Amino acid sequence: MIRIANGQGFWGDSLEAPIEQLRRGPLDYLTLDYLAEITMSILQKQKLRDPAMGYAHDFVQMIARGLDVIVGNNVKVIANAGGVNPEGCRQAVLNVLRKAGKHGVKVGVVAGDNLMDSLDSLIERGIELRHMETGEELATVRSRVMSANVYLGAEPVARALGMGSHITITGRCTDTGIALAPMVHEFDWKMDDWDRLAAGIIAGHSIECGAQSTGGNSFIHWPDVPDLADVGYPIVEVETDGSFVFTKHEGTGGRVTVAGVKEQLVYEMGNPREYITPDCIADFTTIHLADAGDNRVRFSGIQGRPATPFYKVSISYSNGYKAIGSMLYAWPNAFEKAQAADRILRQRLDRLGLQFDKIHTEYLGAGAAHGLKLAGKPLGDIPEVVLRVGVRSQNKHAVERFTKEIAPLALNGPPTASGLGAGRPKVEEIVAYWPALIPKTAVEATVSVEAS
Image (cartoon, rainbow, N blue to C red; front, top):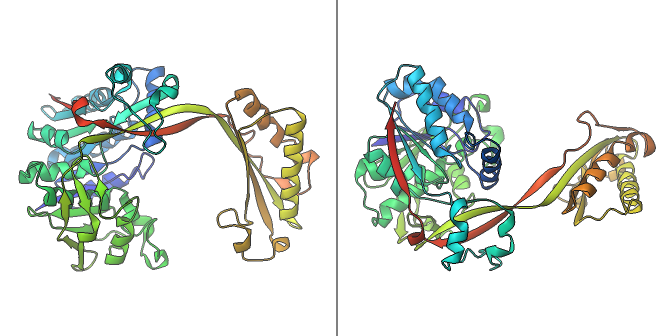
């Protein structure tokens, strides 16, 4: 049996979670998931400004803080913190190791996912990266592409572990792959052992979102969850046949139940019979769950099917500009004032001759999340409403001019306005998402290991 913990559900998750995972009980592996689709484009822009950037710096800081436990207790760490610069991330980690006098620690890098430099040659070779939903050819947005990364699976990560890697850094790897890789390595699972691979995929899926699965975001009965301030992050105890127990460290807050685990399982699931990953297709309808004690749920019976011949490619591209501004209106007639302010703002933008692809208005406090009919009380009685207006345009000047029309409403619009502490809204570049498929034969994942 091996114990695999997850300490990050996204880049921006708790800085203390991975340290607590290391400190509060025995582990064999610690996985850390930093990447989302938009994160890749942000990292790509960072690297364009500075070639030494492009990875998750929080990961390097975590290694520095947890180094004694990682090395002393032989906990192997796997993270997709490399972003678009996994080699730069490795060098930063090696510097931390050497500075701390931890010599001989092997740091592995899995690369080959970044297609930015090979997009044109792929297109010339006739490999079409068509939009998975619209069928559009990438050529229509090629000049605006900001990042292009393949979702690699567990195999190259397991290869790195086989080469002795103690800290393994990947670029774009599936959230499930970084958890499956230790099982493939430790138990010598074959890459066509579909049932075991599917079990590992589901284990990875169950822990990938951090404390969401131990009483956090997905837990509908959240008032019953004890001590969320000290919530424990998830751990799976995996056996060689693929069955595993989902749990957390003893003495931590949160709650692990069959019901809570089910809520995590349906998160971003899609077709429950065909959860497609680079490693296999997992059938969620074959999962058997059983209460295995206090804060322990056993998974068994999982079945899988052969992997597809494709990788998914996550491509981002620039698609104009946006800005979002807000204003708070207080009782009496807060909602009526907010509606009037929206009309006034739109009339002024129209008078200026500004053209937008979209103007979107929300009234926070008056049914923005669920609609006006579910606001819950007569709208005239609402004590305060936040007017939030967003614009989108290919014309950056139009968006910039919009940002200068929000603040004047404080004096030349309806009364009882406030909420300007943040100043003018910020103009932001819109990053759009282009999902595509690519034959696995067109991608080569590479693995290298370097010692401190």
